Length: 108
Image (cartoon, rainbow, N blue to C red):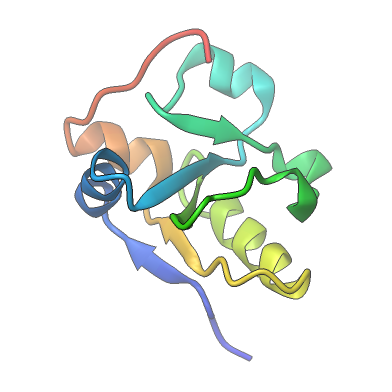
């Protein structure tokens, strides 16, 4: 099967999160998140990834994010393999997020 993961731009993700449509799940490691975090992400590190650790999105769509967009695809496919309908990720990750001029925060 080919890529079952939908690419979203940083602007699409930021807008969706602000409007309450998306739950941003950051799959980077705690040390990365501590250095620089998405302003409103929940952290579920890929190294210990457990689809059950993702909080109930309560009607929102889950969007995975990482540093560059590779691990978020892996996480999305892993969630799908676990039977969850999470097929969206932030293309370009934190690098793209910052390139788009979107805010990040320090200290997780």
